[in-house]
Every structure is written in C-alpha cells, then in structure tokens.
Image (cartoon, rainbow, N blue to C red; front, side, top):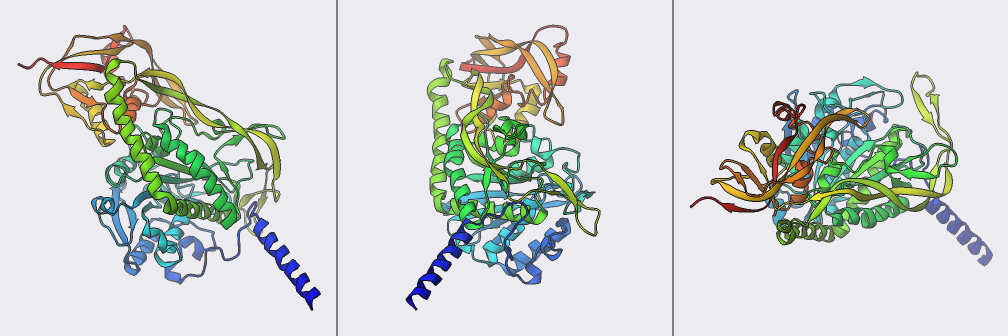
Length: 560
C-alpha cells in the first residue's frame, strides 16, 4: 500500500511538472480557454468558431448588452469618423465614474487599452472584447479595486468596415487605413486624422492615462514568440517611464504569461537572414525611435506606453489567445504596481519642468533630435528555421504551417536599446508668428499651453537659417518628409510683435514641444510638411531663409 502511494505521488508530481512545463507553440491553444458564457455575452468571433471578426454593428450590439447588464461601465464617444460612425469607448470602474474629473479624484491608476488602429490586425480587438467581459462578469472584477480601465477595441471604425479578402482566418478583415485614406498609426505628431485628434481631445488630454496599450499583428516572422512587445522609444522623452516599462514591466509580463498562459513573450523585433540567426533587432520590425507611432508619441508626455504584435503566422484563434493572455498579464501588473507607476510618471513630469526652469535660459540645456538602437545584450530565443503554407482542407484558404515547436538559438544579439544620436539646444520658449496660427493650433491639440503676446518684446535667441529644403522618403509607405539643411544663427535683440504665439517650455509637455518644433527632427512639424507652402513662398528654393519659428532664451517687454 505504501509503495502504491509513493508511485501515485510520483506520477502526480510528474504530471504536475509536465503541465507546468507545457508551452503552447505554433497554433496550439488550451481547450476551452475562453470559458463558458451565455450566447448574448459571446463575441462574433466565438460564435463563428474563430472564423470571423466583429464588424461595427456587432460591437455596438455587444456594448449595448454589456451596458444593460453591468453597473460598472460608462460609454462615451471618442470621435465621429470621416464616414459618420461614432467611436464608443468603455470606462470600467468600481464604483462607476462618468468623467475624467471623477476618475482622478479616486486616486486609482487610469489605463487605456486599444485595438483596431489597423483593422486588418484584428486579434487585439477580439481579445479586448473578451477582457471586458471577464472584468465585468467574470473573475477579474477585482482589477477595478485599483484601476480605472478605458477600452476602445475598434479605434479605426471606418477601416474596420472596408472589408477585404485574406488568406487564413478571418477570411474577411478591415483595411489598414481610415475612411479618409490615412494610416492612423503614423499620425502621432501631425494629427491629421479624426481618430488621433479625438483620442487626444477626449482620452489622452482629459483622462490622462498613466499607460496606454496598443494591439497589432506583424507580418510573417521567424521568431517563435506567441506575442511580441515594445515600449515608447523616442529618445527625446524623459527616460524614466520608458526604462520602467522596459526593465520592470516587460520581464514581469514574460514571467506571468509563461506561468499562467503557457506562452513565450519576446521583444517586437525581426531576425537577420541566414541560419542560425545572430541578430534580433527593432530595426527589422519597423519600430523606429520616431514619434509618428501613437505609442512612441505618448512617451513624450511623461507617460508609459506599450505596443504588442502577434506574429503573422499564427492562426486567428492563437493570435487572439496570445493577445488575451498578454492583456491579462499587463492588467494584473498594473493592479499590483499602479501606485508605483503613477509616481514614476508624475516625478518625470516635475523633473521636466524643473530642468527647463533651472537650465534652459543659459543656452546650455540640450535634448536629442534623433536616435538609434544599440545592443541590449545577448539572449537565447525560439526561432523557426523556415515557414511554409498549407491549404485548409475543404477550402481555398492558405495559412502558415510552422514546425512545432521552434528551435532555441543561443547568443542572439538583442538590439533594442534606444540612444540619442544628434542634439539641439532646448530654449526657454518658442515664438511663432501670428500668421502661422495653424502651428499653434496643432500644439493646442496636443494639449500644449500656448498664449498670444499682448505687448511687444525683445528677445535673446536664435533661428534656423535654411540653406536647402528637400524631400526624403520615410518608412515602407515612402512618406515624402521635408528635410531642412542649415544652421542656427543668433537673433539677439530681435523685436517680437504683439500677437505672436509664445510657447513657454516650463510645462509638462516640454519634450513634445521640442520634438514637434525642432527643424532637425525627421517627423516633427517641419518633417510632416506643415510649413512647406509658406517656406516656398518665402523663397527657400532660391535663397537662404530664416525659419519663422524662433527660439528664445530670455525676453524683456517693450511695454511702458
């Protein structure tokens, strides 16, 4: 009897270890991972056995049911799209709050979760719908003890309805661009889309989330991770929120996802060619140190931001599961460490303002206008030697067929550490002539404090003397970005007339202002062509001209 008991214990331990060591590679998912729910609380994807993704009306109906059933949810419209659709955003809180003012008074950590900025990458949208259900009606309600969670799972509402046929499932998805034809995730600085302007006005500038989270799917990749992560890597931003995400949050997410969901999480990078691969870098995954991406731009606000990408080779259900697992791990981390996250961000905000007050007037304060990635370290990582496609039986649908599991590769260099490359002086403030009101208005959309001078001033400062203006393509879409060549020249004792727009840099968004207005930033206001017409009219193609944006280090009023 004793021997039998020992054998049983050994078998149970072995089974427990086996379950603990299990990893869901390739397209594997746990059985019944999404739980049992009444039909009215199931998503369109679940009802179709993961063959279809939700359209606009599906989501509206789902939200209507949730609002009817739960006392912890409030819904507001983030914006009205180019084609007249509303963009419903859920606020989950216990007790329920209906405004940003109410939310801030609670002292809870506010976070914003987003899906569907690229509707063809719809796994995150579906996962977020399930997360909403878990929190309001399942076992995740405790999260609302410490968090106020805003979710917009279908951010690009028009793109989601422009259905196209794809290989794999879902067979029909939305398109990448919005109703006006723009890629919303290249609009973090220019703010030309109703989507991004609505997000700034009604979420980022009002609710001021400590962290935003944006879900995506990348193209085919050979790495073996179920989902990949990246932070806001603009080197112009205060480094503390970025470093906290990279060195505190990311390792814990990897651990939680491995232990609770049995998936491997890695960095959003691409491998070099050849086998075995030797390099895993952000540069191979279209994740630059520029602020055109929504997540990158948000870091300029002294806040935290995370982007996730499921690999293009995953089956639709696995990609949803991976996104769902990551989101749950992130929410749990925020629940446990929200107060610490708030402290990091608020301290960064204070330090930015104090640095301007202490050093900017001297002309000795600098910040970065460009960055690059360098070696973070060497890692052992899962990777596939090759990928191939197969046809789903009984259909014409092709999907990637990966070996299962991937191979583990040692000593791969991880190139993900952002560093500054080129610097420029940070002024005490910027001055924009009255006739360039559109630049001042754009800054106001970002939440920047702008005022008009009531009296004439004399300043000590500098302006950028443009020797040449040209266009250079950026990114896979080949955006024609304006590039200026020249140098700063002294404009001390320059008279500034009343009516000029003044941007005092002693404010929390100082790094964002610097990034937007510096001419050497590749995707600032100048880079995004916001002054092209005016510069041409000033004769920039025939002679050197002064950029009308002026930096000042000190000023004195001429009013008596």
